Image (cartoon, rainbow, N blue to C red; front, top):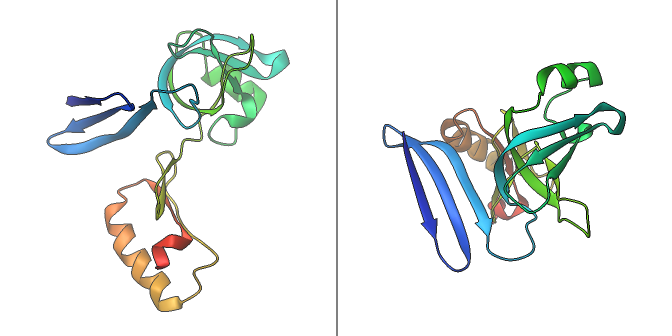
Amino acid sequence: MELYIDKNIFSTKVKLTKNNKLFDFNYIFKNDKNLIGNIYYGKIINIVPNMKAIFIDIGLDKNAYLDFSDIYGRLDEKEIVKKYNVGKEIIVQISKNSIDKKGAKVTEKISISSHNLVLLPKEDKLYISKKINNIDVIANLKNHLDIIRDGYGLIIRTNANE
């Protein structure tokens, strides 16, 4: 496996390859105070079932907060407490910046947006904008994207129709 890091004054991008093929998606860290959308690899520090919260060290000043409702998959509280334990490493995406004494709110439901597509690394479904209603266009998009998505989920945005 190889790790590639591209850092400039605006952002830091990281990708992991295996046998010269993309193994894991790009992690993009924007170098500004708005961290929404940034993806982090962190470690669980504390689980508070009463608050339905998991606190994660993602390398920022304050630990991030993961609400049970932002955990990927349909797990009940007992399954979450059983599956997630202190010290476990986890990939999360910031959904809300930190405010005052509170750390950033994060989600396990990661999405990476572009002009035409949204990549859903933890999904395996293909979604198409409801505004694309031409059956031939839909069939063409499905045929092409089913081949390349390799187990990832995708949302085809309305812009892809243009």
